[in-house]
Image (cartoon, rainbow, N blue to C red; front, side, top):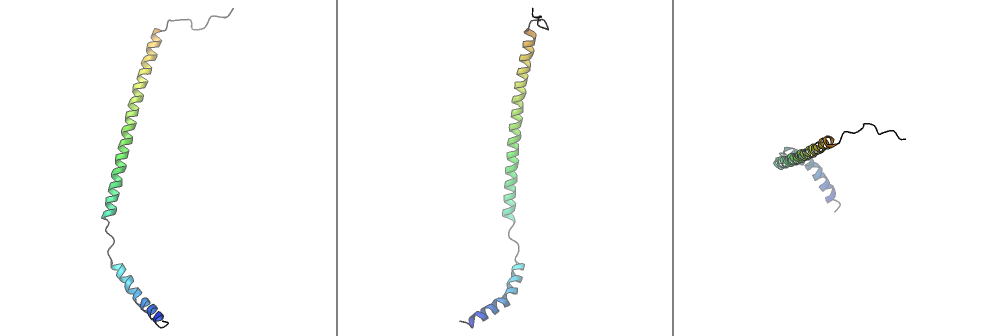
Length: 92
């Protein structure tokens, strides 16, 4: 048993540079899945940005309609108000 261990260590040390050279010659992993994932994420981000922009546009339209109604009500109320004294009469 003792004689096998040094031999195994020596064989491992001899083959280590061979494995390192072989690993360096391997081509890189296929980048297609990463590219597909990046396209998917990009598409999702673009879709979400469009949804947010559409929601903001709809909200802005609702605010504009509400402001127009309020402005119209103020104008109508101002026209209906009878002209009165600008200052209240003095107290006796």
